[in-house]
Amino acid sequence: MFESYSTLAGQFFGLVSLVLCVWAFSSKQDDRLLMLLLSANVAFALQFMVFESWTAAALTLLVIVRIALARRYPGSKAAMAIMLTASGVASVLTWQGWADLPAIVAMILGTVGMFMLRGIPMRVFLGLAALAWTLSHLLVGSVGGTLAEALVLFTNAITIYRLYRAKQRYPEVID
Image 1 (cartoon, rainbow, N blue to C red):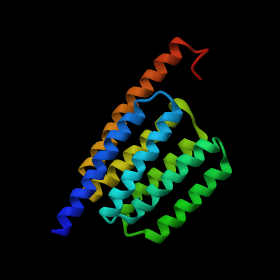
Image 2 (cartoon, helix red, strand yellow):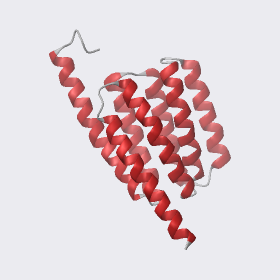
Image 3 (cartoon, one colour):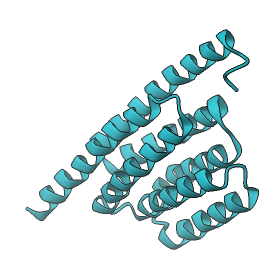
């Protein structure tokens, strides 16, 4: 009985993340994107905890810190190095097996993207991270999380295209 409640709770948190991620990646504004991702990652962390995927849960909690640091210190190689080190330590401490690898790859791609890139290049790296997170969600059996990441990929691709077109039309305005 408890297992069915925890599965339901995990799926619920995945669906909450779905709504927040689509809203985030439909935004053309980097700040709004990052703020909505903070909220979505709280729900993702809860989902991974319920499904007992401890590396993904720990890294998702670090994603929340990373987003806040990337907003405060954009372009900071020192802050990026701190996040990558913390992610490495968390991964070593929580490693359960090869199923944890996609979350680690996602964390690395997302960290580099958020600290070092802006606009379209940042969204490309975040899209690749979303692809790795999709695999993590599939491996834990999260329907909502898998769907969230798939829709993030789709929405992100549309937003990249919209930004590219805007840049072509108004090169002096869009950087």
